[in-house]
Length: 144
Image (tube, rainbow, N blue to C red; front, side):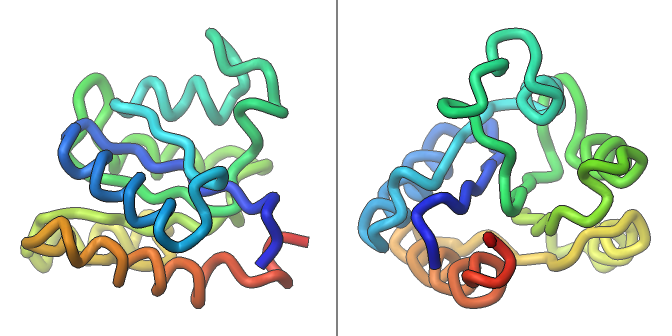
């Protein structure tokens, strides 16, 4: 994996964001992670507007890790927005949710999510999620 692969993590729960940041740092990928705390901020980031214009500081992500229950715009709305935009239609989106509802999984797939990963019950298991991301979505061929 190259150091340039960026993961945009859209998460409003501070503890989950902290666990993910720590897991990325432990995996040697700390510089790859960008965090935003709500759906509107995710769209602004992806558009490169409202404070996210500097693409050196806020690079276009190689993959988006998306919670569903977000303030300002839910994860499904962000996913729909991305799939309507030609520049993000093929960007891998991994829904990362504590939802165990089968209809959420089905809707995520229907809207174009590439994967659905259940949030672990323990923050210590976030490292396993990072390893899955690293192996499945952050390979050098996808980041070239």
